[in-house]
Image (cartoon, rainbow, N blue to C red; front, side):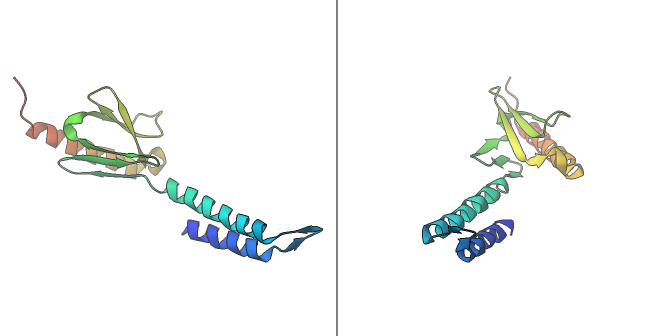
Length: 132
């Protein structure tokens, strides 16, 4: 919704500006103003992109740039420390994946999400046969 409002606002401003004081806005300036509105709207939409989905098979993380699909066997731990702004997945290969969809500012929702993901991971780990 905010992205649409930004585009409409910039389009109205771009088409309404023809003369400001002694300056004159030409067609190219008006198109540039509308183009800026589109660029800002795309930025707003990118911030709203993060998602996380988890089930018995694994977890799918979509951040602002890029995404991951990981089986539970690849996830060593799910961390959400006090000094972290968002949840992280520690992987078996010592990498870490930030999960921007679960942030500290979400408070109780974030805690519930972490607990649910930890429960899914624990259940998946119990089902996997251990190598002797």
